[in-house]
Image (tube, rainbow, N blue to C red; front, side, top):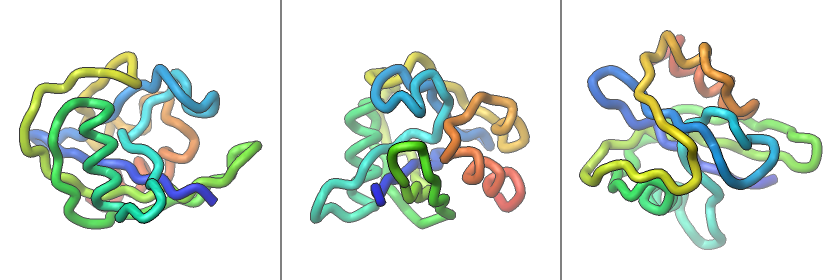
Length: 128
């Protein structure tokens, strides 16, 4: 099981999603809540802050666990955990994504989301 964390970053009532341009073939070209794998001996909160800094060059503070989804791709299983994060500073610069958007919770499911992110988006839409 691969531990993966994702950031739920809110700005003016909209949430950050990004379209993947690098990495695993299962998520290539798909929209996702940004994040990445947790390294050995790394806390999930630190992992999400590190991943957002690496992929977007912005600083966030991971605050609280929201929900998770255990998803089986054909060749692996991931436990994707979503955390609320506060934006601290920086201007978004893309490294692993083609584009990003700020999307209302009601519009999240209108995007071609990575399979593991769909249940997270449904939870956000229904509960936040």
